[in-house]
Image (cartoon, rainbow, N blue to C red; front, side, top):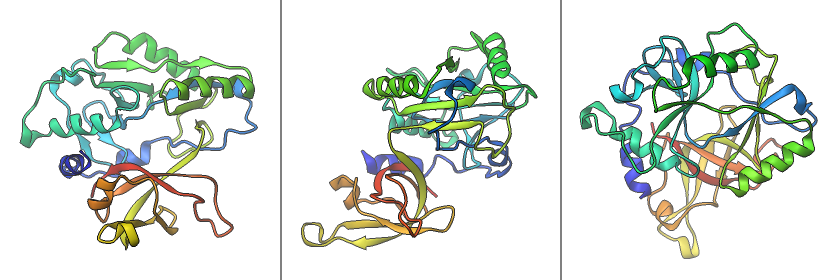
Amino acid sequence: MMRTIIFLMSFLWVSNLNSAPMAKLQLAGKDYHGVDVALYLVSEKLDGVRGYWDGNTMWSKQGHVIHLPPEFIANFPNTSLDGELWAGRGKFEQVQTMLASFQPHQGQKSILTPQPLKYMVFDVPHLDLPFNERYQWALTHLTGINPTLEVIEQYSLTSQHELAHQLDEVIAAGGEGLMLHLASAKYLPGDKQALIKVKPYMDAEATVIGYVAGKKALIGKMGALKVRTANGVEFAIGTGFSLQERNHPPVIGAVITYRYQGLTAKGKPRFASFVRIRSNP
């Protein structure tokens, strides 16, 4: 399965690299402890592929065109949207496979699947309004325009205790976590204060730069991945892999997601564990 996904993903982000959409994205911070939860709107963190709609084209977080069938984007507005291409909890790999199937060289395939792909909108970047007003605008103007587009529900909580309880419920139901959106904040590209991830563990992304050979039972297989973060920190990840992934590890240049539990005194992730491939070069 993983080998198939790697093959498909090698075609996924192949056209029209463009750094402009990346520069427009609002990024999420990770430190939610101590924040006044009552100042935020809360939504579920979806385990999908982020997509920036510029009014005409869908872009990935890495700045590549995401090809979608005409019927999928029918009636999408000619304004910018920020959201997630999502097929349900725990369906990240299925989303990757579906997106790969939409590539022009493979033809436009039907989007009717047992678990339909949707574009889940969580923000409207072009509006110079506070987030709570952008959310209301989205509900008013985007609801019902296409079955493939849905506005993510936002709701209010009053305390860290309520937040922790809600997080437990989402995780128990197979979700990934929550997102906090500062209700009074305008959409600011790159800002990490107005948008905060809430997860039971920390995660991040890094680029594969090499391999460590396996030993003992893993002789002839990949023992660990050598990776580098966007900040230039290099380290090895040796856990979280299936046997198939050790036989066919992520390729050099792939961006992977890993989980960790804080940082060491030298700034390296503590107890880093492989989660999945985010994108291939």
